[in-house]
Length: 492
Ligand code: ARG
Figure 1 (cartoon, rainbow, N blue to C red):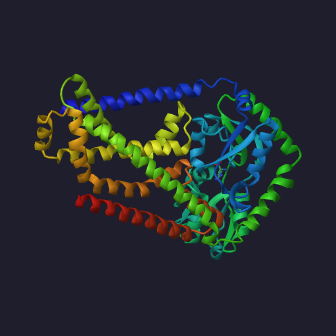
Figure 2: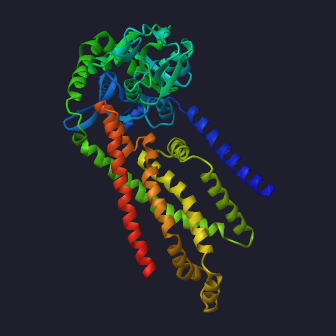
């Protein structure tokens, strides 16, 4: 028994020793052909968290939800000056730095402050904008709150991974500081009085307040260095040639005062027109895309998960020589490891971790991670199903002269499948719901779409209700269809 766990542990440790050094090597290997590489590739991928108007936010442009804002304008100018195309990748603010380091994006423009801590891991251009911090509150509370010190005994919210979150934590007393990944969620929490205030950069505070009559803003009076109040573009560490080149653009933008004269007013216009139609029906296209991706992920993952499951189940049941024992150990270790770690972590591992070696798109990564995960569970169902087939069946088949493989394929597996059909059906339904986890790596499935609609319309509850109903319709239909086949199988 002890030996068994020892082996399992050794395998897990070996896996980590393999992966961790490789990932650091990757960071160091970044020699400076950064500029050349981008120009050869012809596209510059900009990572951003579009929940921070006027820096970046979602707006419906020509009927399509699009990322707009002053940072997008800056990104476009940077790409143009480099002679390449700009591609925007949206993700939560706290994923941006990892995404840059693992090559998922080429640069970050997201109102990011070039703080000394961040400078240790990435390179920044010159700053393009000076912000400063305010706190957004409910208008009804204007008399109650003056600055950061008024929140004693109350709750202050800030986006996780941001400078303002750290400041709120360090520079307030007796205040509970709550972090959320999305700025739009923070505003919704404020409006439903789960929070008393939300700290953010002044332009963003102004944008939210001018768009929402129930909100007001007060100064934060955070004590901050200038590197924590200005914004710059981040590139991977060691990209000196690229940073130098982009600095020319940034200096030009500053010299011509483009942000004030052009980029901010343009963003303001989008903010005004954006909230004209916030009915859920208006966003049917977004929800439809969400359903489409949810189904693609689920169907693919169930299919590959089933194949992986069969292989694993057979491996786990292998008996005999050294090779078969090793196979059995490996399959057992795999199943235990997958069942012992959260699917969310597995999704991030495939996307960011394996992404170091092969650049997998988010959708592919999501399908791989969920198939690998589902395979471990399905293997257990199949193993149970195979065990439930009477030994007499195998013996009869063998005595008729069928080979081991044929017996499995034509006699045992078909009967096993009938037994495990309900469990497989359950797995399918579970995956419809659990596939929502891939929204964290930016796969545009239902949850992701509802987040977009939420930040697009500034409406909190309606999109949640819509996707709840949609998920139910999906799972209910699926379970009806599965039941139908189950009944059919029982008949013959
Ligand atoms: N200025 C802050 C920081 O660098 C927050 C920026 C948040 N940006 C966003 N797109 N949500 O930490």
